[in-house]
Amino acid sequence: MDKVTAKLTVFFQEPFWVGVFERVSEGKLFVCKVTFGAEPKDYEIHDFILKNYYRLRFSPAMAVDVKETNRNPKRTLRDVRKQMQNSGIGTKSQQALKLQYEQSKTERKTASRAEREAEKQRQFELRQQKKKEKHKGR
Image (cartoon, rainbow, N blue to C red):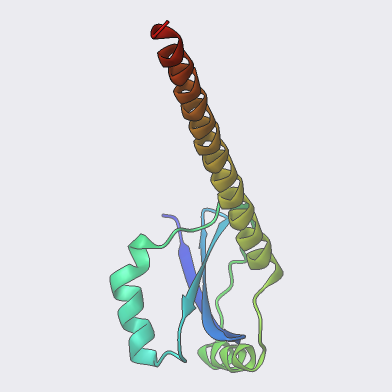
């Protein structure tokens, strides 16, 4: 059976609070960035996860090494506290977010280019029609 791990990191990035969801499944890392307004409370984050997790748009998959270890719960708690002190997100996560950003940017560019071309064609057709209208009245 496949093991899926999920992690949420919430940090302050001027001027908003940001959450980064990291999901590791089948040795692949998926990342999604969510912007919160004011500092979210624990119960607000819990509600957000319950209501919106399946609507999140995760980045394309990136290969990542998965380490299988059984850890002492006290050690895990210490690591969590240490991570709470550190700000920022992991480099793999940053790369995945950048990849998702670039992908959406290219999609936007192609869509706007197609829209621009369609508008140009429509204007051209309109000019041609006006020319024909002028010549009909000879």
